[in-house]
Image 1 (cartoon, rainbow, N blue to C red):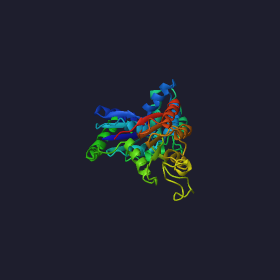
Image 2 (image 1 turned 90 degrees about the horizontal axis):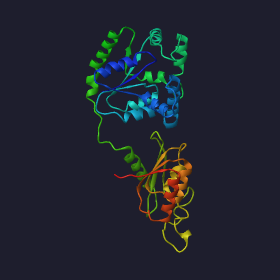
Image 3 (image 1 turned 135 degrees about the horizontal axis):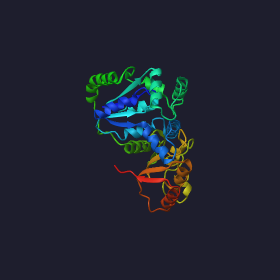
Image 4 (image 1 turned 120 degrees about the vertical axis):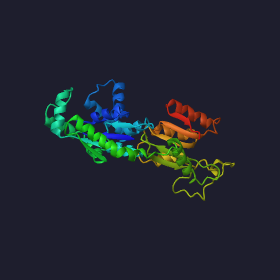
Length: 335
């Protein structure tokens, strides 16, 4: 059973999470990932810095990045996930079959009293200031905090408008109602890995190639695992592939395919739908020196290849030299 908890400041989210921890739930906070980033950068762990760094991470790696990094930690145990503040984070977590989102609510006057009582540095000193700070968490920018949109996706609402014992009773009623439903649902375990998925897409793309000797496909993936470019080897657009040669050998180089062919990597880069900085490219063959130049210049920082059958050629050696110098990661995928 995996329970997500969302809600506004001092609504009681941590109290609910703490109660569930005592019942054996493992607690993950999406904010822990942001805290780790702030520590690396030697920045203070203030609420403002947490918001700004979280927004920056979503902008650079996709709005669901915090949820996806947390999903990687999930085991078969019961879990609680807190600090869910973005619509895309909720949607990513909903891919887990045994997941449910709770929205914890509480009247603003009660929440303000709790904040006043705990008296943390940076907490608002008036209800007006609390409202102003919370407005910053209701952005229309999908890379920022969107508490209002995340809360709308909750299946269950717990109103923390009374004392602790009443809150605990409400949690127990929730567990009694939902635990049997969610415990019956188990995700399948025989799904393919991300590497296999993207390499299979590259190989599928290769089936579009009309080259009678070598069919190569390439697939470019963004940092948040979105497909942003596909390609296969073939002649340029507008060049009749019935008139140009497909031969690999001829006395005159212009009677072979080599002066005309566009490689899969080049086509994938040219077909890309967005900035390629920090993306990955999956390709059937290790890139040649010409494709290596394009990979480096486009900002791709990792190449995952299936075969390396031309490793002794000068083209391969030049390619590897440039990719190593540009600090592009190289990794051979094996089934």
